[in-house]
Length: 156
Image (cartoon, rainbow, N blue to C red; front, side, top):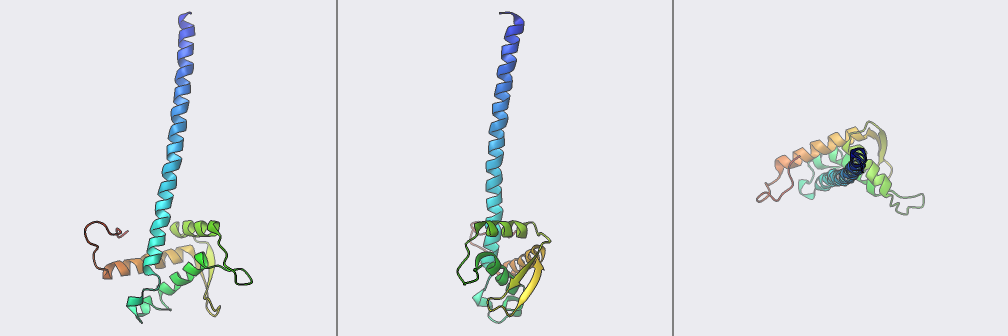
């Protein structure tokens, strides 16, 4: 073997190793992105769960059927409680994920939120709903008892 043959063999092997390393990094990046996105969705779900229909606030208008939390209640129904024409539940995971992503991004896309009896209909953007969620969550955090130790949800 000549020096050129050895160099050529080494170069090919080096490029194969580099290609494998890049493939591994791309796979790790995809996995981390999935974890990151799951965390964002979980944070939104937790915020919605914390603020929706808080019984301890009674008739306080900020937590009633007419304030920001009413919009959040209608949004919860829009995301999770859809039904077909005959009233059967529609379990559309794609709709849920898409809606949560648009809420997280504060998308300007308009949606129609309707009360269960159909008497109240609101046209709002995901950005409007995101603003209501942040406002209601911050109000709740201001009134909340601090969690024991560091085990509670951070106040984003």
